[in-house]
Amino acid sequence: MRRRDFLIGFAASIALMPFKVFAAIWNKAAFEAVQINDARKNMNIDTEIQSPDIQITVPDRAENGAIVQVEVRSNIPDTEAIAIFVEKNPTPLIANFMFSNGAEPFVVTRIKMAETSDVKVVVKAAGRYFTNAKQVEVLENGCG
Amino acid sequence: MRAQLKGDYVEVKVLMSHPMETGRRKDDFGQLVPAHFVQLLTAALNGKTVLEAQWGTGISKNPYLTFRIKGAKIGDMVTVTWHDNHGATATQDIAVTPV
Image (cartoon, rainbow over all chains, first blue to last red):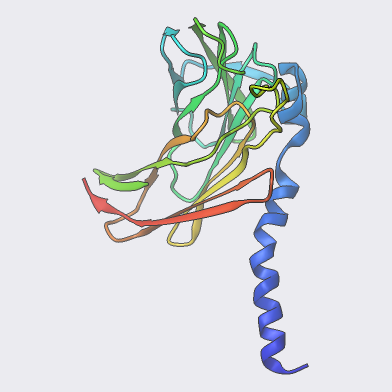
């Protein structure tokens, strides 16, 4: 094998690697769970501590459940991850955000809500789990 | 996508173009539209990972995301990459700017 061929092959395998690594980590069992407790179990969440240090900003009422803006900030020291659940959605786990290297434990995103439900947030900090929730009244189903 | 220095942190705002199909929606002919959604998103500052997100079908169509990074300065590069369940991927780079 010529040196150049070897290097090209090497570069190609690096380019393919990220996707394979990601595909391996996507938590299929948790995201496809239809019960929030099964989703939690598949994320290895056991005991949660209720915490007002998780700030959830959501509208009290959402006209259209297809787009509900959610802002989450964790004031818990050493926050590693923020997971967002909608208890009454067909699949309750919406997203899990993992922070590192200077990222603040803060996120704003837009989610779908099938009906009026609690938006529940679970924060992982120093290996422990904390939770808080806020209800959103949904006037029109957004999970079509 | 935009990355602005606001005091001691950089605020990154991303808007992606993606259908985010749940797999439960029916089209006009009553056929189920297959699930098509972003599963993984990563963000890096100057090549160093700062955020890794796993998403399900509950993120809205054309996903929107804001996040914040401490310790970044003007000119630093923010990279956001996503992968969907069909194997498609996209990457965006942007330099940190003043507000």
